[in-house]
Each structure stands twice: as C-alpha cells, then as structure tokens.
Image 1 (tube, helix red, strand yellow):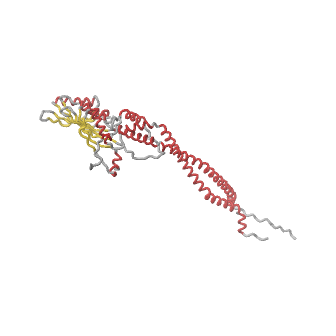
Image 2 (cartoon, chains in turn green, yellow):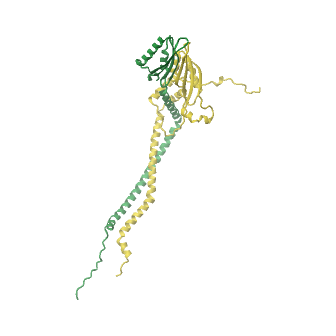
Image 3 (cartoon, helix red, strand yellow):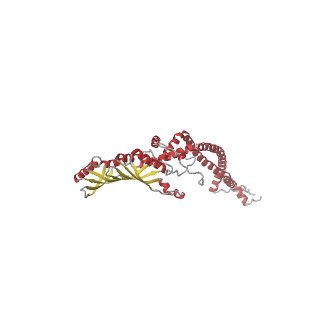
Length: 186
Length: 240
C-alpha cells in the first residue's frame, strides 16, 4: 500500500498590507489615546483646583483695594476734576492769541501828523487799518516806515494799500491790509 | 471536526482591530463627557484670572497714586482753579473778573454782550452743541488809553480771574486820545461729562500743567462768599 501524506496545517490567509499596518498601529493609538486622556484629565483637574484658589484670592484682594479706593473717593474726585480742568486750561492757553504786542505795534504807528482811525486784527494775524495823514509827504514817510517794518524788522508782511482818498479838510485817508508776524500774536 | 462559522473566523482574525477601535471610541466619548467641560472651565478661569490680574495691577497702581496725593493741596487749589475755569457758566465770577480788570487797568467796559445758547430748560442744558463747546462767546466794548487797553488785553488770560480769550479786535482811536476796542472774545467753563470706573487710571498732570496750577495758586484770590445776613428781607407776615 503506497504511503500517503495528508497536510493537516491550515493554510494561513495572509493579511493585506493595510490591514497589517492597522493591526500594528491601531493598538498603539488606542493605548496612546488612553494615556493622553488620563494625562489631560488629571492635568486639567490639577490646573482648575490650583488656579481657582489663586483666582479667588486675587478677587478678594481686588475687592479690598476697591474698598480702599472707594474710601478715597473725595481725593480721587478732587484730583480728577483738577486734572481735567488744568488739562483743558492748558489747551485753551495754547490756542489763545495775545493781542497786546500787535495792538501796541499798530498804535505806535501813529504820530502827530498821522492818525490811525480804526484797526482790526484777528487770530491769523490779519490786520486792517485806516490812517488819516495831514499831507502826502507824511503818508509817504508812513509807507516807508511800514516797508522798514517788513524788510528790516520782519514784523509785518503782505502789506497792501487801498486807494487814497482826500477829504474836504485836505486830509489823506488810506486803508492798509497786512499780516502780522507770528511773534506778535503769540 | 466541525468547521467554525465564517463570522467567528473573521472576528478572531480582526479582534485586535476591533478592540483598538472600541477603545478609541470609548476614549472619544469620555473626552467629550469629562475633558471638554473641564477644558472650558480651565479656559474661563485662565481668561478671568488674566482679567483680574490686570484689574488688580491697575487698582494697586491707582491706590498707590491716591495714597501719594496731597489732597489738601488739590482741594485748596481746586477752589482757585474753578474761579479761572468754572464747572458751569458762572456769570458771578465772570463779572467779578470784569470788575477786577477795570480796577487793575483803569479801562472801562462800556458794553458786554453774551451769546447765550440756553437759559434754564433742562432740555436746553443738555443740547449737544453746548456740551461740545462749553464756551461763552461774548462781545466786549472797552474804552481806555493805550496803556490801560494794552494792560487789559494782557490780563485777560493771565489766570488771575476767569480765562477769556480774544478772537479778534476792532479798535477805534478817538480824537481825545482814548481807544475804543470791540473785542470778540470767549469765556470758558468745563462741565464734567463722563464718569470713570473704579479701576480706571487717574489722569496724569504734566509738569507744564503743574506749573500752570502753581501760577493759579499764587495769582488767584478767592472771592468772598456772599453774606446772606446783609440781604434785607421783607416782613415775615405780609398782612401785618
């Protein structure tokens, strides 16, 4: 009787590459996720307990300081109102125009033979005034003085004279527009 | 030998995969139940703590600043400061300033004209224009000689009385040598419009502002309060 052999070993079914990979990495991922979960959970519990206590302490401290500040409400109000007033005052002063110098300069232009009848000035330094002179010579001298004030003293600029009128008393009336230097209106 | 069913064979074959997946799912469920609320709470504590820390720092700074303030100095000078820049229109101090200017310079205020925006109604007082400007526009007619007029112009904003600034001037030189000046001017007042929180920092007073305050402290004379006893009163009973 011829000898027969029977293969009793079950033929192993090989896994596909993706299944093999999954079998390798999925258990590692599961273990890692458990570890991460426990770590995060414990970490958060520790963080909450520690910081909640510190937070409450700070809140208490803040409340105590608030009470201290409330007790000094009068001082705060006085100081704050002073600071606000003085701040506004400084702004007003910095934008204020002092007309003393420019007015003085205008008045100084008059003489015995030349009278300044009216003059207007504004905060931009624009000056407009009317002069009455007894003669043309006086008027010429006055114009020379103004030119000197512009070219030598640099007190005025953009000097413009408007039409000379001779009135019934033989006086000469002249209107002049000019601009004052910044130093005169500060 | 009995052959195992196919599903059991597959189950045995993929038991590791199934168990790992189950663990991952359970961890995800646990994370959403336990981790998420704790994370949100921790985040809230972190943000609140940050807020409280900043508030605490500003409160400490403010408390220290308040402790270092010489309250007497500011209290005394606030009275003088409000004579220069009052908290309301205060015509009394304005006319007192006019009187003081006339007495000091010798110039005479011939005419005063105010441009009033509102007089007494509550709604009028709350007009936005008024709050924004807080100025009292006016026209002053001042008569005096050259020296008096120049001194008058100089003293308007010297901080010894109500601060008045001039927008423009119109001079008329009279034949008698006197000068009539028409001044378009403004007086000011400053109504506090906003309230500040307890943790808001104190406003800073700069060095130049302190110098201005010192100037006011030395130049302003406190106006005496009106003595009500001197005001004559009528009969208590009108029918007697």
